[in-house]
Length: 227
Ligand code: ADP
Ligand code: MG
Image (cartoon, rainbow, N blue to C red; front, side):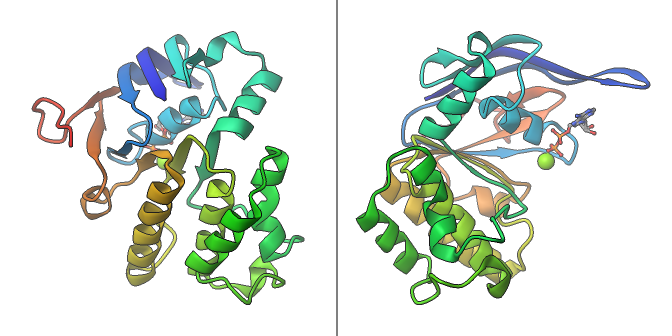
């Protein structure tokens, strides 16, 4: 589903190149959920951006659904994102001028794969039934993030990429949103790569990897555990 082969990524800074990912290998199978942990500044968001084809590696390969993103031009990468990926960020990135229902449908419409029954099911599971005509600003933070999750999952993407999806929520709300996210990812049959700095958030996922000094390893430094 997602594969990194010896991926290197550095940023140009006034102090010279900053190597963020030095040799990242990663394999995520269909339907598998993986937590990506690491200290602030360790390169988690950089890795996620590469997985989404929003940026390209300096060397090595990133394969999404068997296709190397470096070999695709930007329109083809955009199509791959649209047809294969769902994205959820710490900021909700809802469209303020669209209703709850139109926000939910947005991604699936762009991908040309709207499933009205699944959308209705999502609205109910997300606790947004009866709020379809509201606008994002009329929702609480937890409701807004649930809507952002629903929008990402409406096309039933093969892979959901989530960057600290509960990072902007209070602890109680974060717990609720997380368990809902895990349930819906399972229902959608999506694989998931989720960035988090909370071991508690990472615990229910199939696997957990730590990003340290530009490389991925298991939390204890031992062989990577599988379910
Ligand atoms: P994390 O998500 O783990 O906090 P990031 O991937 O956002 O880490 O950033 C990793 C490192 O790369 C940090 O030191 C950050 O300051 C730096 N960085 C991120 N994006 C850029 C950029 N566009 N240009 C220069 N440096 C960047
Ligand atoms: Mg980050």
